[in-house]
Image 1 (cartoon, rainbow, N blue to C red):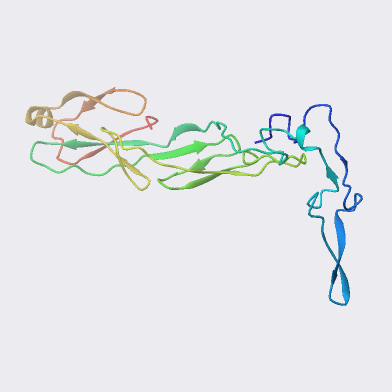
Image 2 (cartoon, helix red, strand yellow; image 1 turned 180 degrees about the vertical axis):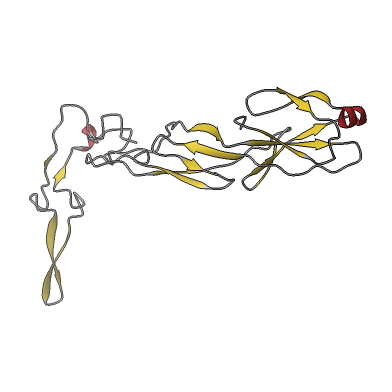
Length: 201
């Protein structure tokens, strides 16, 4: 992040002075054996200018940037269909499908999975010279849910039926990502049978 004085590194109103050691060249000459070589000025570190110590920004100590944090909003939205499983007592559930997408504001990424990385352009470290900031890389961590289970791009949810409901049919409430919905159960429903709830993802 830029320092408290807007990335200038010096107190407001103070202008840097020409480096007294290199005379504003940024380099100095040094004798090495029989040769003269040019090295970076150790006083201004090649910046060609210096500021008296008492005027240097206390937050960055003249470096113009400081370590800090900022928030970047990622909008998470659902996508595609939602599949529900019927489970009878004593039977194992069957898998179903639900694909997620994340919209970082610069494009849509579908099927985002745990530990996947998303790049958010120009949301990284600040550049005190006025160039564009670097990019921010966000590593997605999918939190476990007590109702929905995810395996790769799949999400699983179970709907428990009584024997009577499975044989004669009826209605049940099924949890979805946007709230419970009433689902009509057809007579003769079998264990692990899949039912698709369109546009409920």
